[in-house]
Length: 355
Image 1 (cartoon, one colour):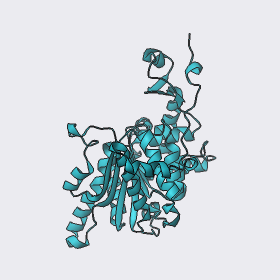
Image 2: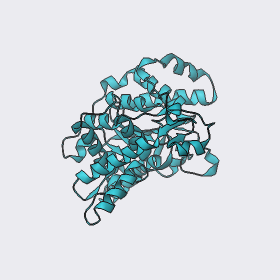
Image 3: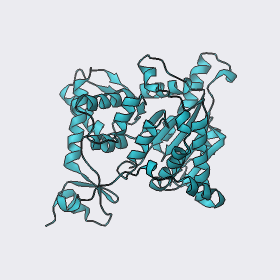
Image 4: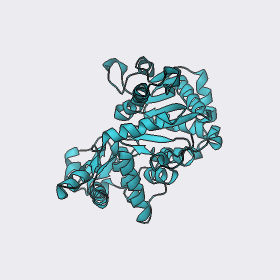
């Protein structure tokens, strides 16, 4: 009979955009058609975001990206000043990034296995990737331990993920070199997870609140929205680089409307209010015909007053293919070398923010 070790053997390796100069390849795509040309334009737009001295870059993440080998791409964006804030799903940040920071791995698997056997062996499957469920439970328990250590009050997800980074810092650091939460903690890049209960942190919070029914930590999604809106209000221009759709996409687009409402209430003239997102790129495989959020085009977002249409590009491609090419192109173009650090985390610790 097969054992867990028979399946959990080959580790997923995260691609390193620094090792692959894709400039010539992506430039050649400009003279092709279909998604190749779209990808080239998206890469050029991301490069423009980084060259625009007034532009703050917000990265949004949805889907099983880090378990698929894209974690180091985001780590390199943070450490090379190519992103100023991140909005993500909880699974990416906690179940995948923090999980690996604790020393656990994702494994190369197959979609053609007996999932009843997987369940019996406590192996979770994400298409062709395997995860040890027993190790994931340790991640769940660690989040509860962190919540137990905090002052009982409502927190934004940004505050809590900063606490996760602090936990790693105070316990010998992450057990990997490419932890995104820890890099963001060290580089003052805020991370927001609007649906924070929808991950290992959700299991941790219900254990914490059950054990502390009268005084406990809770998630304040309104504070999340306000804090991300404050980043918009403290930026002359913004650009969004969106991987997938979902809550992170809509949350980030909505801060334009939120900023406008706050400034209208403050009786600012329209000419003085925060502009729409100047730049926008989205990588997605969603079909626009179903009217869903994840598939809605950036031109459609313009009708809602969220995104300008001069520098926007949809790329209909699976993220593990398109993201390394776009991010790698911008990295090797080198505009990040001349960017000023914004360190938006300091905005919420009442320190000076460079905008």
